[in-house]
Length: 145
Image (cartoon, rainbow, N blue to C red):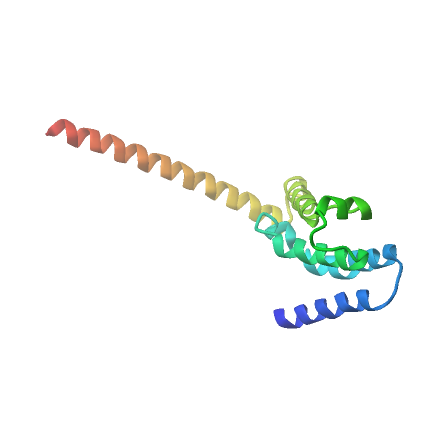
C-alpha cells in the first residue's frame, strides 16, 4: 500500500517537472497534489522528524528554479515566497488540538481525549503515591537497622 502511494507521488512529481509550466503554476500543482499526500495525518505525527518531507519539498523547489544544492534554503524560500512545510505541519497540529479541546462534548474524539486525560492523571497520581510509599518504607527500614 505504501509503495503504491510512493509510486503515485513520484509520478505526480515527475509530471510537474516534465511540462514547461510557469513557476507559480508548478507551485500551485505541488500545493494541491503532492503536499496533501505528504502531510496526510500530520496532525498526529507532526512532532516527529520531518526532514524527509522537507527534502522532497526543497528538491522540487530547486528543480523548478534550476538552483544548485549549495544555494541556502532561506534564499530558495524567499525567492519563491514559500515557507518550510514544518510550519504547515505545526499549524495543522495546533489547529487539530484546539478543535479537539473546544469541540462538542458529545463527539467521539472529545470523549476519547477526556478519557485518556483522566487516565493519565490517575496514572501520574499512582506513580507519585508509589514513589512516596516506597520512600517512606525505605526510611522506616533504615530506622529499624
